[in-house]
Image (tube, rainbow, N blue to C red; front, side, top):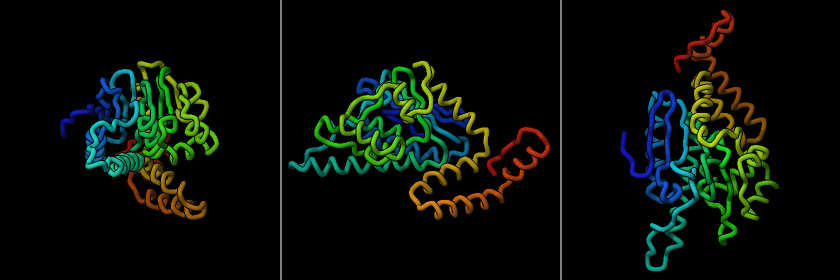
Length: 263
């Protein structure tokens, strides 16, 4: 496995713990970090030992946003460099969202701007009690551009998302829980452990079923209901041919815990 400059990887099969490691910059996403994350998630997607990922940050922040300081000013065409940076960051978010297995953000501190958008690309978010979420871009004359204008409304509804985006206000952990941004708030130092525990609970289910359930939700939400229901039926039929489905049925009839083999 590649050694990275700005991220750390700890494998605890079936879980991989990925840590943004630029604490001196509050783990802000520069182009190098974005590319490292993309390469790592690509590798993890092919790793048979990994059935889920916990994503967190080193130090007092999860990720404080985007770091544009390294972009070249090519003869006054910095706007083109910025657009290319945004598109590359958006592609990373899409990659995480479509990662075949669940990804849980363990939000250990500030998740602002691009950092908040990074959490939105994950399947679930578990917050430490000192976590803070926000999309402050409009207060700086720009807009959220790593997917925030699209994923936040899908998560919490249009009106609440517009209020957060238009004002740029920050949301603390308890309010984020009430709004549905996070699924749990835990003591600050326990965020990563709680995310890992939740992943181990998930990976006790049939891995192929979880994988196709994620695909059904992600793809179906963009479809008309009837088309999405057909997708659900197709995936159910496909899973019915697997050994894990047979094992699940046998375990239910025999009143025992199933032993899934991801087959």
